[in-house]
Image (cartoon, rainbow, N blue to C red):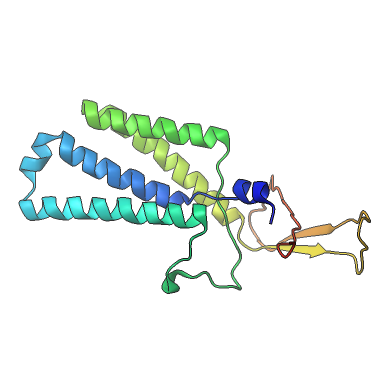
Length: 186
């Protein structure tokens, strides 16, 4: 196994990161704002703290399982016949998420409702964009054709055909990344 390729192929779980962030925001807002602690009952406060702790721990578990490729619980095994879908953000998307985090922390610390409104508008656009991308990728069929035989050291071509089965809206600006690897090498 190629050690460098193994390190570069590691993925970080985005739901795990979001769980850690939400749990941290809940705990931070509970500990920072004294009026919030007075406004809610002690049972609701303990529920909020335990839910926030659960979110942080479960998110940390997801991140560690994906990054270090730890075995998952039997109920969480992936089905073999499902298509592997991954979400990756470009650098601009990560900067956008960082700006959103700074805005929500500034709105919570400064108690600025206008800043919270602007955050919700920007987050709504981000969620709608993600939903539209997911919807545009539905009903696409990808077919890869390999040559019948290839010998070692020979250059060969792979044909990729993409078919759109949607009736209303077509999918545009698609990028197909095809990788061939042999994990059985010693």
